[in-house]
Length: 370
Image 1 (cartoon, rainbow, N blue to C red):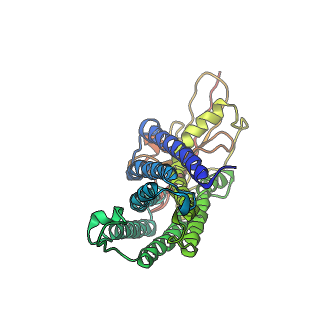
Image 2: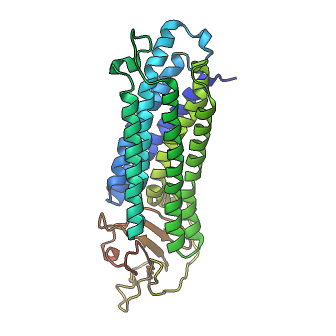
Image 3: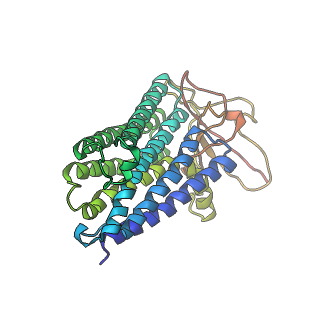
């Protein structure tokens, strides 16, 4: 049976691999496929090395006694164990901060409405303040800063364990609340501005993965509130460290998932998993819900072209991104397939159906004749 330390080590190896893959794919899709790199991507790229460093130290802690009874850990290893803890805590504050900022920076791509922009600024400010304050309180909690990494330093004057615990409780509680908002706002934007359809369900499913992040943060908060880390620290440490790692890495995955849909769409087509049935839809005019269907009289603007081949009917829905001049979240369907990602179609780029609306839905039909 695997020990607590083995579970932590194996988990963090998996987290390192998957997070690296998702961020690399995000960079490929945004940088080369859709050419729509933005601030949200920058925050994700900064968060990745921080989370990788945190997980690497978690793995290192296992060799210094993490998961073992403290009485079984040699004194020299125990000293190294406690010396690494502050660095891990600092990395946690920074890593989760950048992950949340990545999701906050994504919100204006979904909607340009004033209330969404204001919410984004408010959430971004809250995340920056919370992460920065906790980071520097932790960093300067000792009168002599290097004593933070040396528990046995003579004359060590640092914050009491209770004050440190209060800070972690406050950070954890505010973090769970912010995560709920970061999940709820995209779901509200999409559900209120898209007609309820199979496509809407797929988009909502992508964002609903964030529920796991909220649950993870809540479990972690419950554990740090109910656990006395002053007793048998090396053993109880694993209880919260596992959830701490999951919170940061899975949050990063959630930030990356919406950007990977163009790539997933290509893969499903090549594997023959896309539906081949024709899709028909009504062409309606713009509504006050923030989305509209573009209908034009000439054949070119309506998306009709003639080429050699077989008859194909396509359908595309675009969510506009004024910040980059490209659509950031798009869905391309043949039948009811979903494609989420930036689409660099200039012809669609500047048409809004309603003032302040950030989501524009367009039908493209291509007919090829022999």
